[in-house]
Length: 300
Ligand SMILES: NC(=[NH2+])NCCC[C@H](N)C(=O)O
Ligand SMILES: [Mn+2]
Ligand SMILES: [Mn+2]
Image (cartoon, rainbow, N blue to C red; front, side, top):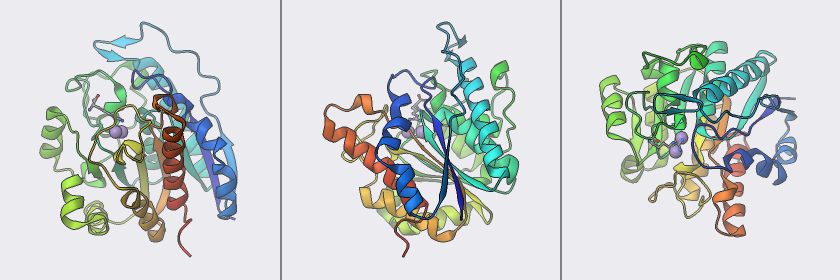
């Protein structure tokens, strides 16, 4: 039986909005573990952040917010997920904000140095400590994974920097900061925006993204704000004009079909930002469906 570790990462320190730490609890409550067992997985639940102390008020590095808690949390996630991978278990990490991908992606690259990363998001999250305007670290994980920062705060110096620019592809972009555009261009990173999805269709965009990152195991880091706010309203940085629900689910379905996925994240679910119960249900349902599709639900 294939092994699956559901890794709870109720972390919110990479951005200012309370409630994104409730994401894992809500996804569990929707029945995700049972649904994945029904798909044939031997499921265990990991809580690497259980012992993490409360974030300190004055945790700052210049205008960067919460570097210590982001560093500590991502290191715990890294260690947990590496252990899961080493025992042949698939880490499905439920966020929390997107800064947690510093831990999840580093763990996979440690185990599988040839792995490629699909970053599904309205945002590129590749700001450096210099380029970030907000100072929110959920907008910066890719720059840490690639080693694009010079003066890294001590708490984040553990990050191995093993991600190569030719092993990542973006899908769903539509809100990229000017500094990020420069970085993407300079490094020649394959980035498929909503324009490309309209122009070529999701199926072809996936082929192009997979072609760009080449062979090897795959990591799927899925920020639910890639999906249009009509379907996923309860998220911290919604951007209109996103993926339809079918595009959003076809992508993980197609990746499941490749049988190359070795880990995935579902992040930025924030039930507290819903203005009514329907918004909560829609958002949680979409997040859980992304995970189930990536794990083979719709392949008969
Ligand atoms: N994971 C996310 N939702 N990131 C949003 C980032 C927004 C903006 N680019 C920033 O750096 O603050
Ligand atoms: Mn995003
Ligand atoms: Mn993101």
